[in-house]
Image (cartoon, rainbow, N blue to C red; front, side):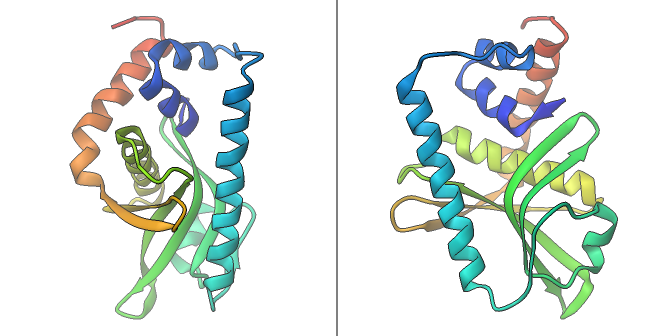
Length: 182
């Protein structure tokens, strides 16, 4: 199963991805632990700000994919979506009714990144989450949002712009996980 975490690890280092996939975990890196804790804290704070700014209901806890299209909430928090051999842990996603009709909603995954400057890997990971959400829903998801930095700046990642590279990376990870190194 290719997860958001494995994708991020692969974008940093394919060996790191492979080691994580077999359960090998690094130890004793205080900086990496501190950085991970800061990122998690930023994600929690971002979700809190998002929840406070929403005038509509929020969905928390596991939501069945079949019920998403008839949902009435504006934001769903901390959801995991699976499609084929892909799994995305989405920090939040936004439901926007098309033409005011809830049954024809558009969905946008939202990712929180603590750094002021985004990396290419951040954009690819946001695209991955949109791709998995799209496959889970059976409808196109063309945009992912990233909220980042000290000022909570928001950028939109068009899935079409990262799809070609994302497809190549997914193929590389699949090969890596079955032991056929590239």
